[in-house]
Image (cartoon, rainbow, N blue to C red; front, side):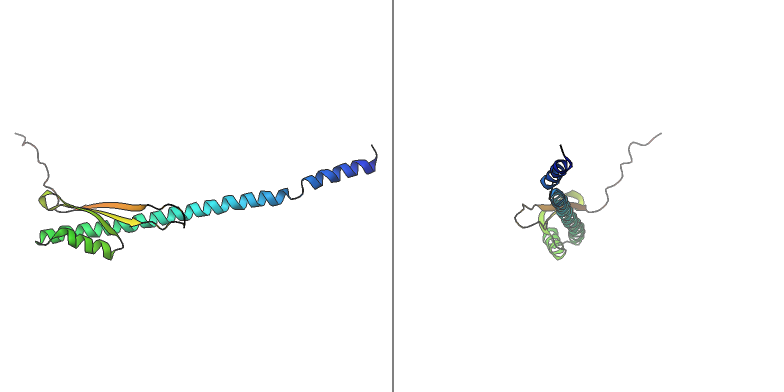
Length: 137
């Protein structure tokens, strides 16, 4: 084999690999883009969950206060929840002045992707009496 022939063989190998870096760079860019989208979706879900929890907490407190003051607790909870960006999914008046409120809030998803509601539950009312047990003699 002469020097010219070996140079042509080496040049042929380089031509076969031409553009491989571009394909690799596109693959890395696609992975970074998908990771960014996943992180954005996770952040949106966390933000919706936080908003739902705040609305549930405030709705439960408003409902328990309304119940204590002799008003209807669930309409009061609905008003408080809606003012705080949520939708009242459930309101249960338990015994002894305790109110359990469940709130749903839609997550901001990407167009074309299925979205779910973030939900949160809160409970408010008077503190239960401590169980003193049997007296020790």
